[in-house]
Amino acid sequence: MLKYQQIAIEIEKYIEENELQQGDKLPVLETFMAQFEVSKSTITKSLDLLERKGVVFQVRGSGIFVRRHRRKGYISLLSNQGFKKDLDDFNVTSEVIELEVRKPTEEAAVNLNIEQSDDVYYVKRIRNINGQTLCLEESFYNKSIITYLNNEIVSESIFHYIREGLGLKVGFSDMYLQVDQLNAEEAKYLQLEPGLPKLCVESIFHLTNGQPFDFSKVTYNYQQSQFFIQANSY
Amino acid sequence: MLKYQQIAIEIEKYIEENELQQGDKLPVLETFMAQFEVSKSTITKSLDLLERKGVVFQVRGSGIFVRRHRRKGYISLLSNQGFKKDLDDFNVTSEVIELEVRKPTEEAAVNLNIEQSDDVYYVKRIRNINGQTLCLEESFYNKSIITYLNNEIVSESIFHYIREGLGLKVGFSDMYLQVDQLNAEEAKYLQLEPGLPKLCVESIFHLTNGQPFDFSKVTYNYQQSQFFIQANSY
Image (tube, rainbow over all chains, first blue to last red; front, side, top):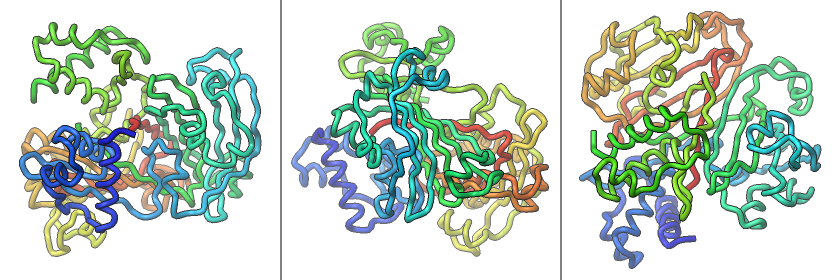
């Protein structure tokens, strides 16, 4: 982790520990420079990072302010952490239904930018939150990038393993959302009635070098699904 | 508009006109510097802006690449443009059901950070896309910021008016999503049956100085609602 990233974490911790609220003003740059013993450009990078993450906003000529409208229990749709991290306060578990090496569907191959003759790890699992079904997930991992998965890894946070175990850098992602009615199979897995609402989220996750490594389709139990998104102005 | 913002628009146009695809490499910085006759720091700012907007991604030591997974007909959940702009290719119209100055609900007052005795413009409208209902929208605008609205403005793009007519700068926004079943009133407005799925999006829009000026609740017709989100790594 780079210096400016470390400092960003420190500043975020400072905001949390002091329970600063939306609109509260942060100390001026010079204070942070002295406190962390770094240059202005390092602090500026830390604050830019926190702004992109939706933790602060900067008003030209006036200062840096806390941005915290976050409501409890909402899952961030934008964090690339895998959401186990967002729901730290909750008890999230995974039930693995299928884990195998196979050929991708046409749709998965297109989204992963591979051939249908290439291998993928196919993962199907149900995720539970506080004992209730949160979602049904089907994921296709490009096996030439995600070279190994097993049941134990897949029962836990796959993204944690990708980062720490495989040492890969997760970059940007594209997500597509659609609302519809549950079909019989989805309803069964989510323990709901067919015809009830569902939220489907298709995601394509890329490494920082732009290679797509994971195409996933997640069907959420609407009763458990509250999401938030923090959007920045450009 | 600042120089670097102008150049960002030019580069985006270049990508579109040349129909560049995801993964295509852009010219090196020096080429852009020569072409636009600006410094390296200006071009860097333009490219950072395009990266935040999800138009390009930068790979350290290797270059700048096009990022374009966008599927046709999907509405960006992250653009702060008001979505009339995202759906340029479609015919989006608005039917105004109510427009009046009134006191905010408690919920609206909290989210706008005002008192319940303050005035808001209340707007209720249905938005149609290609002749079908897209969503039912209720918005509360802080009247001390959005000082004037009329039927003509509200039938068109309110955000365009806020920017161009009132000269205000729209900043970040917070959005909360929830999936549920349509109640009788919503179903009537959307011309669907009660009990069918709906996507509710609550948004709080802020000026660049951090002041919330609009609290809106939008209920989408699930048959017309496809959304995309481009997420960046931090």
